[in-house]
Amino acid sequence: MIVVVLIEEAVVTIPVNDIIKIINEHSQLALEVEGEATTEGTRIEQYTDTGKDHQWWSLKPAGPGNDGFYNIENVHSAMSLEVVGYSTQAGAEIVQRPYGDGPLHRQWELIPVAGKTDVYKIVNRNSGLVLDDVGGQKEAPAPVKQYESWNDDGRQQWKLIRVATNTSSPPVTVAAPTRIPIYQYLVGMRDGSGYRFMYSPDPNYTSGWTRDIIAFYAHAQQFPGTVPIYQYHVAMRDGSGLRFMYSPDPNYTSGWTLDGIAFYAHAQQFPGTVPIYQYLVGMRDGSGYRFMYSPDPNYTSGWTRDIIAFYAFPEALPAGS
Image (cartoon, rainbow, N blue to C red; front, side):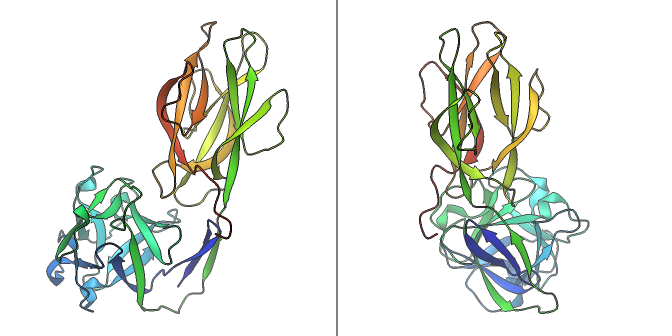
């Protein structure tokens, strides 16, 4: 079965239930179970492609309620990729164990690498970290561990190559969004202390706000790897309107009122994305903070950099992508 995903204006085919090889783009070595073992806890490594079935894998749906995630099962051992010990630490080992009831550290998400065909980042659902060719090693056997995603040289990119196709199920098509601009709107503070900001995909928002710049690019719909970014508001004490805050937390309180989902962005670094920093400054009347969001890590003008709020794209897709 092939899952066809329309993502970033490209068609991506995920070979669900087919038998595949998983080849690292940097090392050109194949993902395998060390020593052709069928015992649980055996380490996963990279090795020269031998054509044997301990280097063959099958992507199986992770189970009901886990859409977009996969059990990566070895054909030879019938065991699944797992991050050892439920670890969320960078550098944790990858081993094989029976899938069982499908705990999160045995579930994986495939994130397509822009501009490449059938090449993915392989992200652990529990840790949010990705499969990595440790140290960029090219000599077999080469280790595989989990690390933070970065705009790498191929060592975190894996090409799926079909060995055999399962034709028992029809293709499934999943629609996903393209990038949309998120506009920054501003309005001056009555006390002359600067501006308050609002962020929206609507290019024609008015209500007293002035459209300033495109702050970043995000998504209008959710697809694997993205999270909702919620808009919260609180009324200005002087009656001049509202100030806004944006967060992936659907349960933020502290006096703020949830408006709804403003757009979708990434909770973890994804190829092509940059951190969107939350800046804050205290209200002169002591009623809290106003916020601004920017990819600039060094914005000043009286604002204090607070946290990375989420990850988004700094630019639109190139023409023809």
